[in-house]
Each structure stands twice: as structure tokens, then as C-alpha cells.
Image (cartoon, rainbow, N blue to C red; front, top):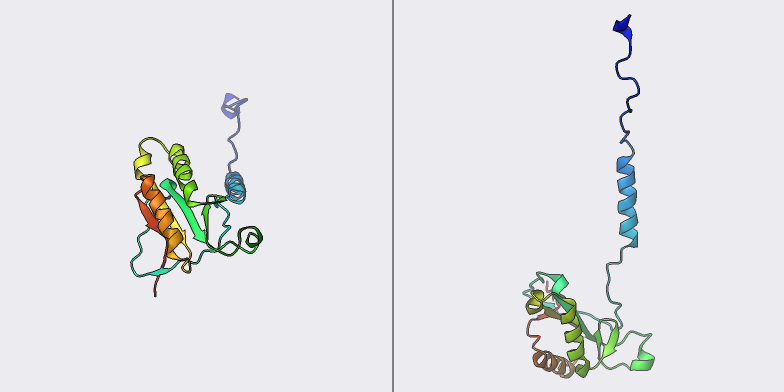
Length: 154
């Protein structure tokens, strides 16, 4: 009667993987809802000017942004309606740009510091006086890679 006996006594059954895609989908959905993509909150209004030739940034992780525009309605009581400079999540002056650039360079590795780009996001109605002041401070800080944000003209 040895012919009909069970050969694998006490073996472990195979692992059921039918619910694995559901678990992966739930994890993906969780991380998509929890992750924040925006790093700064805009405190100035920004309507980019139009341009005919647009070049995209190669590495956005090496880019620091300076916004110039009129303050939004919630900040107009304190800041007025003149054009203001926003450095990350705070208003600044052209004199604050040096400290801002130094702090942004410190965040990068030694190799990437030379490739750091400053992107100027300037409202199309801003006068050039404040833009000239910002550019002069960037030259003094040796931040010479400057990118100007614009939308493609149709």
C-alpha cells in the first residue's frame, strides 16, 4: 500500500500573491496623497511674459527661484501694491539676496554649486528698476547662471 501514500507530509503551502497588486496600489495612492510637490507658497502675483524662444531648465533640483511681482491681496495691507521680491517663503530686499544665495549654495553638494541656476520669475508688468537691482546683487554674489521664466508666444 505504499503506492498511494502522501509523499510531502508537513510541507508548507505556496504563498498566495493574488492580493499583492492591491497592496502596491494602496501604497502608491498613499504616497501620492501625502507627498507635497510645491516647495514655496506664492505671496506675489506672477504673470510671465511671452517669449518666442524658450529653453527648459535641465536640472530643477539645482535651481533657486526669485519671484518679483505685486503682493497678493492678503499681503497688500502690510506690503503695499508696489513690486516686491519673494525669496522662498519670505519677502526680501535686494540686500537680502546675498544671504539667500549663500544659503541656497550651502544646501548643494560641492560639485553642484558651480551648476546652480537662479530662475527669475518676474511679473510682466513690473518695472525694470527693481529687476536691475536684483541682477546687480546676483552679479555681486557671483550667481551668473540666470534663467528667466516666460510662456511661449503663439
